[in-house]
Amino acid sequence: MLLKRSSKKSVPKIRWQQWVKPWQQIDWLLLSLPIAITLFGGIMIKSTELNQGLTEWRWHWVMGGIGTAIALILARIRYENLIQWHWITYTITNISLIAVMVAGQSAKGAQRWVSIAGVPIQPSEFAKIGLIITLAALLHKRTASQIDNVFRALAITAIPWALVFIQPDLATSLVFGAIVLGMLYWGNANPGWLILMISPIVAAILFSTPWPLSAPIVLFDQLSLGPLGLIWSVAMGVLGFLTLPWRRFGISGISAWILNMLGGEIGVFVWNHVLKDYQKGRITSFLNPDADPLGTGYHLIQSRIAIGAGGIWGWGLNKGPMTQLNFVPEQHTDFIFSAVGEEFGLIGCLLLLVVLCFICLRLLHIAQTAKDNFGSLLAIGVLSMIVFQVIVNVGMTVGLAPVAGIPLPWMSYGRSAMLSNFIALGLVESVANFRQQRQRY
Image: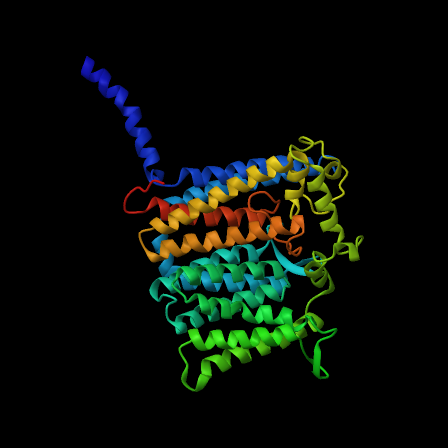
């Protein structure tokens, strides 16, 4: 009788272990922290909508629940299988972005959404995941230690990046750049090459800067040179000569110098003839928001006032005057951090940032303990995406970065963004789940 009772009691335990076994090595802390942020995000979104009669906070939680289920499903599937499907993933990514151009929906001067069964979907959000998978597969086979592999990765990135940029979706195109830089660095690319990659963007900014002169140097009708841009281009020429492999006849240095000169002039052209007025306003308003307090600087001014009004401990949930009176536009999406600052103060902001930092540390740990390069690169790609979005979003709410329209992961309202973040999380959890042995940190 004692033996029978013992066996009966052991049956539930065995069943429980068998049910949990497919997830026994996933990083539960990494999964639970985004869920906690999602729940908190829904509370804050409800606070921002309290006097507007909106209920988008419910959709925030619904999409968070769906995203969590997807993440758990992905965690059970071996991530290595994605290697053989990466070209299909890349093709689907580009087709979805082309579909936006053909049959997309426009809003606020941009065509970024397609309607599927009446639900608006933003393909550019999921394109970030497709890019991470494709680059991880490429760099897994051929590391970025060779310059030709770097060019190959850049060429692969160029197509979806261009399709996103012309929507126009400048914010997501910047996220693409952060993902590529992070993954190339982790893939053993020379740091000097990475500096040269972003150097044309810096040149584009410096070419339009007249300092220390009163105006840029005008050579021709459409050609102007800023002194700082010239100095930067020469410095990049020296860096190119020291790091690039084609040193004979100084080809590497000359190429880097020409690249920056062209980048500077293309940047000036894009600023004058390509970017929309609202995009220019977003980029420049953070430097001097008071120059247009009722226009491009309005978001930033109201956001800073709301965060400053919160003080150390904040006004309390649903009690922030700026939040409840709807002074901050788009507060439930891009400017949700300002609601946290007003209603929970400096302490609430710091706690949220600490949780986000823990998520990033877990992603880094999984990248370091992955059993192969593909899994490690997947984790680093997701880490690069999350870090960049957090820095830019928080920076723009406090006036340290341009208003770029980048949501705060798991906090800002956005169905496509929420699902893409949880899909990314599920891929990393798969990397953690199928490590050769359980890792602890």
